[in-house]
Image (cartoon, rainbow, N blue to C red; front, side):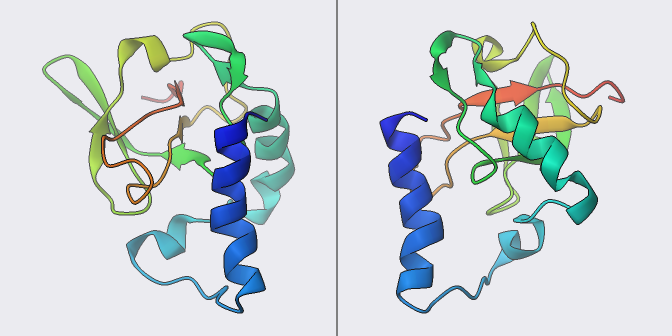
Length: 130
């Protein structure tokens, strides 16, 4: 896992627990966890996924990767960010083309908007049902 991913995971997962503030609130709270039946499948997929445009870097893990909804605008893919529900542009170089996703759904790996005001995207996998 690369350095920024480790820092992100610590900030999002460990710090709130250490501070006794593990309660989730806001729009993204409902979408933050994977369904229990999909947890192992997603963990395996995310832990071995690397950035399409930089294969030496990990897409991170289930802390910032999740199934998502998409829409097309003028031929470009926009994916729904879980934290705020906003659809963000998926750069073509971030779309996975060499690997199938585990469940046929769209998957986005991206930092939350508080950590990336520029709508960064680490990785994106287009589902087969779209």
